[in-house]
Image (cartoon, rainbow over all chains, first blue to last red; front, side, top):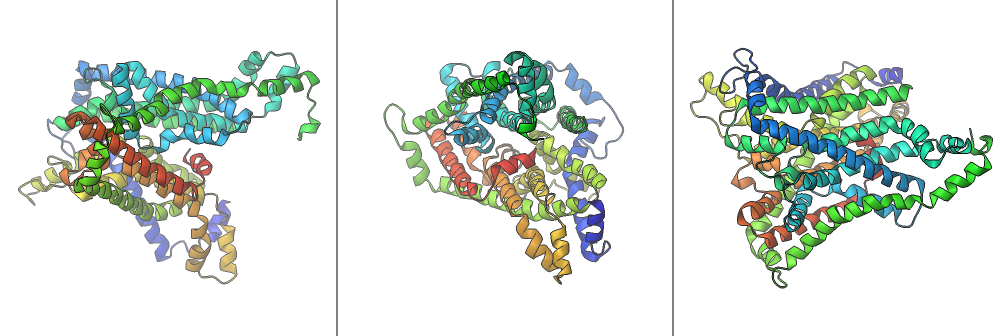
Length: 272
Length: 293
């Protein structure tokens, strides 16, 4: 493949290809630069943001750790994201099995319905749930936010698990059943282990979808019990304080860690 | 290996088939969940938009009679289209370049697309606030060099909102285009060249048409996300950059006019669904989602 590509580029050093490379590298650099800026600023020692900073300090990380408000927000974010991952995985796994392994009228409509929270503007979902939660008196509860985040995580989970189930060789399950395994033990000893990479990826996607969400948190959390993005939002509107940069750096780190884990799992499972 | 060569014991053959009939029931929990937390709120929103102590079309009437709402709707759509054009114009060459690299470089450089893609949108928008704000990096740098005395107002401009949206959505576009371009058999272009086409002709007559699914999918995704975006216009824009999501949030948080908020949400929903139905004819969603992963 690579040799084909080599011969294909007619003249590697033609002005057009140099221009294309220069343009692309610039764009990629600009895509990455703001993240670098945030990381660098988060280590600045001064009270105001300077770039490049005059030295190195962890004072904004200390400010973050020693502030109970930030700590509360962090705890809530992790709790909500974890619960979201669990709930969306349970619901998503079951519905994926139903979608992949049976046929019934309106299956395609069900699939589109399942995917639609991904496409409909999130603000509409947020407003709808806000109305609902106010009437149900569950506005600002952890459960309410977990349910909302599960809704936006479900499309990812269903996508990943369905794809894995489609490529899953069901004869392995049948073989286990033929050898005397009960449906549940076939599921436990054959299906789950083989789907483990997809399940872990789906859980990570759901976790990050919840952890990074701002718009649902903005409508559905209380000011006294915010998520991390909500707490960032509150602070951003008041003062530009490098603490936000420190928190942002940590949030980015968690997202990148999630991405790296998914990539690692894919690599390992494609090898094995 | 085909099915016939694999010995399936008779008992097991019955088992799965018997089970198959039960699988639709596995949908029940998710179905209940979606009805309660998705279908019901949307229906209730529709209801709220026409009912407030009796039938009322006050929300819709206000929308259609106030030119300012028309202006906001129009502005939202224009922002969506301009963002789409910008991300497509910037993303297409970059995706093309990335696909042409050898595998190691593609993996390394895709990280520059994937890491922003995975980072929180709020963090990435906040970064632009740090860069362009009154006490932001550009202003403090310019002042420290003595080039300007007063901070320049970068924020609260159409440009700031467009920069923020384009920056936020560019990875989506690049990933959509990349996944399609990566599957194009480049021998087709080689064949075109062999048959006497110029490189430019081979590119436009063979390559570009084959990337259509990616272009449609990316454009649809970017437009939908841009139109529904709240944080970017809220943080980087000013009063002149009011989009529909901002007005909806304003009605709920400050004006406390639920009827109008519901009516505006319904209008945004109808616009999105209409675009979705239109896009359905051109976008293969299975492929798009397969690619976005």
